[in-house]
Length: 420
Image (tube, rainbow, N blue to C red):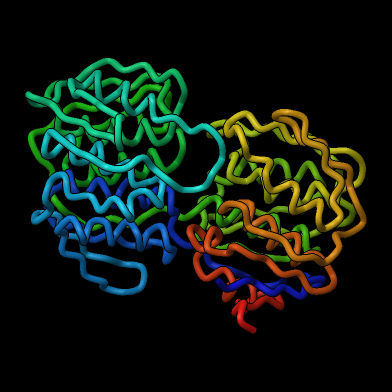
């Protein structure tokens, strides 16, 4: 397997363009099964998770045409029920969206337990609760099996946790169910809004997305169309932090600044200069970094997917900072890798206490998961000397052309073969 070789210590200067949001694209791709027509999806990120999702649909019978690198035509009319390729599905967590789509269209679905990054317990109990409320029977003995003897019916569903995945899956399943479905304590993330907008563009009747209460009035059928995925706020936030960590000056284009507010506020609190435009943010290092406290939370709180990247910046700040992780159980696995580079981090349950250092030390580290991998890249970019990063397949699940984009703004980074 290849690795990344980073010769750091150079400020990132210039501009980068942000791609489509992986976490928005995945449920929309699988929702095309429910649409049962031709959909053209634009601004799809060119990352491995998206390629795997498209291959799952292709092996289920969908006819997929690549219009360009970021645009695909997906015809799901030929899709066969209960045909999910389990070898692909078990490698990505987002594959569970096939459940809501197949249940809504065929009244039955079967897939493997979801894979993806190992971030501790990530139960699917809220998905099951929602499907059962709509009238389905769910069995998780070997994989996940859902079926219903009669058409799905709308229901009042209270989410015990504001789960993004469960909210999206229930929305998909309920879009063509009879009657009204109300999801209370729903996730409010931008990708939930994007999914609702996509389904509505195909004829669904969904209101309240982006609030705690989502109402889905079931319709008889959906129709195809063309839809563009929103920009990836986590990719954008990663470059924002990379600019600050490398003492750079970076303009990040094709963003929705409102989605970045939690990250922006913490950067400003640390003394980093952030300028917002209509569809860009400019981040500039402006002197020593100040210590802060961060607590991750569901949107609009500070995103858990920015925890590792922000920790890198806190390692370079003066004094003692703290990150409290309130979303994922095992998010702090990456801290051992930063400690290899000289970071001073103590993990106590859901808290990481970070004492700032002058600089990291070059080393060989691992990308233990997707966002941890991005954090290792940021740490390496900020460090004079050469750092190697292994297990980069995690990074490629969610970052489009990371090497090319970083090289375009002054980074000395390359992908090298382990055979070299």
